[in-house]
Length: 476
Image (cartoon, rainbow, N blue to C red; front, side, top):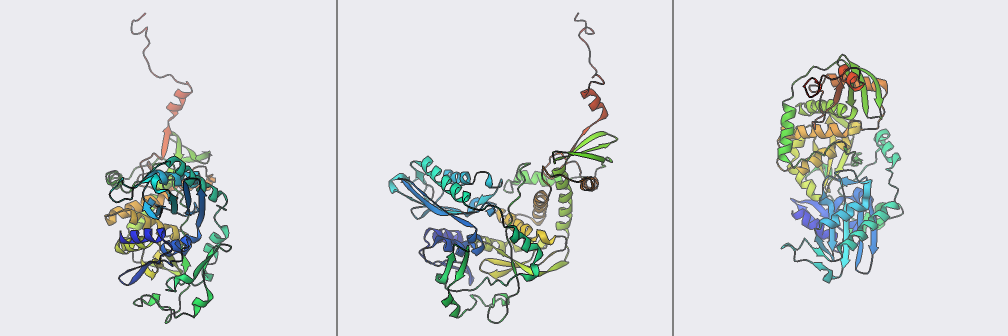
């Protein structure tokens, strides 16, 4: 809570320099130059700040300004949305709705942007006495303000190139050995940090280089700049969330519903599966196969989700000490509050084979990964694991592993409108037949339906259903 309060104050007053320490470790440091983007960089990190878009709009009653994240940069909850009225942090559901409306369909289902919206308003138009904390505010002309915010965001996003950088993604997979050194814990005076809009990057002014650079905390050799050369590391990027819109998003806070789902999955018994012969696909979504039981229609997404769920459930559940060393370690950047929470919950991550070490400035470093995890999945998988952990308060290792398996299987399964070649389709059916429960996806949706020969003959009126005529009943 303290970190959250300081972060909100830092965003509300970028002209004030804030520094927050916890057990000698710096969690938040802002420059106090009055530049809101610099304040965002101090709280959420430089990587996040570079992907923030400036917005501005006004009318006779309101003046709206601030920054919102590109659609590719989202979070799993609303905690990264900050709305300010005359320099005071407030909560307002309708203004949150206006932010989402500004994005339109650009946001994935269940994902939320990072936003800092500063609203200047005549005090007579705002009633702050709605709640004792003064955080909930009733605003006159609220619809006009909502329209102003939505249009400001929509206009700014229209001016951006919203296609993720393909070269950046290519570099991630093909030039790992050439990754540049990154120093994440240099306590330079941040008043000398400036943003170059033409290059979309932050730089340190030349005179800063002459300063005596020392790590804020010297207890960890990783943080030492003077005595130990920095290893080559790679800044992990959050990938655009490929949320599954084909079924209801799993609600990790609905404990009773989640408990029932996990109990059903635990009680699954191995089933026999018919031998199927694949012969076609429809609309890149459904596979057609025939067997002794007739015609089978398979939902390819649900099928692969089931296959991957059982794979991940087994691998994540294994207590295996064998880890693959990374040639180039990954850096994972979080906000100050998330950084503290993850440190407290780190034993759960260790239980699934993820060992993150503190690296300074709200950053963790990953030097090795479980052997079952593909290297191209590391960035997205680790962020997903951390996000899920941040959403839950108390969770057992067993439940956490099960939740991870559900989430990872969903995100990594083929979606609708994806054409499969014959080999891939047949291979999917072979893998499905080997599943413990091949009939339902982890969310409970059916994987396949069956039309028997008798069903088909009835549909085409080749045979008539048994019935008793009115004449037989003596009505005539």
